[in-house]
Length: 110
Image (tube, rainbow, N blue to C red; front, top):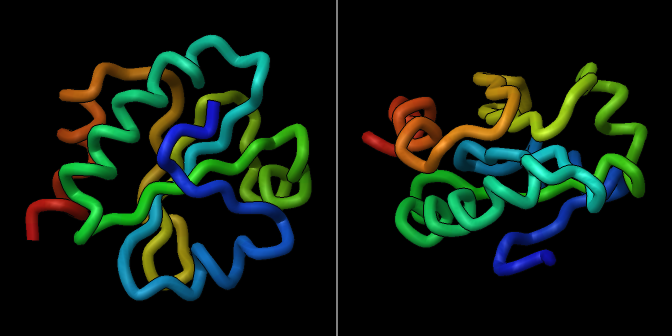
């Protein structure tokens, strides 16, 4: 269930996410997480609609525990938006697409 979103790992997180020129939303998820699967289609739709402004990637916390631990991800889904190498916004829990778009307004409206 990777869909169209790119997967990042502990190994390439810095390169893909922290060094990106545009904001990157990282979806911290796991295979067994129902709400994670629930929001995946919304994230893919947002990526399709706003891909030129924000990059959306997934990080499987079971396979990449280091990054999740580093950023204190305690519950999933957690969506962190990184800008300039820092966490600019954190969204915890499954939300409808409209709510996610509202939360991301500052990153996708420019």
